Image 1 (tube, rainbow, N blue to C red):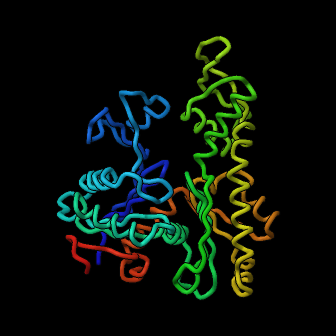
Image 2 (image 1 turned 60 degrees about the vertical axis):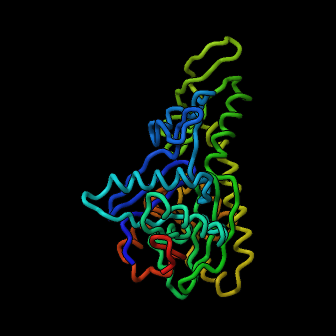
Image 3 (image 1 turned 45 degrees about the vertical axis):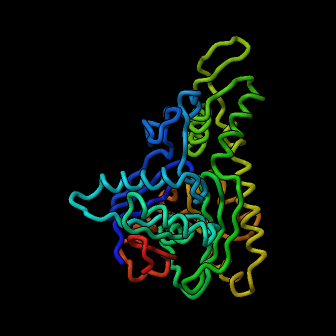
Length: 332
């Protein structure tokens, strides 16, 4: 089976690949009351984050690899596929999903996808795609270890002999840090910031080229909006929960490993994927508290969609990574 597209609908962004070209946009769609179709999608809809009202509602198709709005997911994917290769007559697409998605939920999702704008649909575990996108040989005999730190969840997975032998997930991804940062700004400075400003302040902590970040705030004492210099340390403190969750998850999963896999863990270390892999100090914390080396893959925020590209471009080798697929409503 050949595939044309791969979609990673995350809680924060939609990343998709056709061939080797990767594109992405924000994972929001904006609706008017009572409307079935969004009037804005992607980056255009992201402008309404923090500005929702009774006249504008935002939706997301998936969170943590779990569908929350399947009709939106299908129509969105179909629209993106329609804007791809010229003359492409079929839309054969792979979708990254949570490893915890049940078999019945997968079956329902596949049926819903092919009933609308997708001709053939396949599902790939997001942790498997992340491993492939990070350059890991999941077919190796010895254990390999991947921790994906996404927007809504953190997943720790162990691969050996071409299959996933252990998976642990935890909430507390990067979006939780946004809310924590906004709360810290309010308690420390008495100022209110929007979700977008909190997100930008968070991202400033990744590079930390300066000690402060200028952002738009609302001053309740004055009753007026203004700009303020916020210390980047606030964002670093806001990210501490995500770091603690990642360290706790890795330590707990390591304790569940057999003797041979535990040895492989010490030898190979943990490969970090997802946007949260770029948090400063995370690899050191993991190494200090677990004794296990941690590495960040290249462009970790694109690991899942790059893994889908690997499958698309070598379908026969990685056919087992596609857990199920249907064409025109008939199981093949």
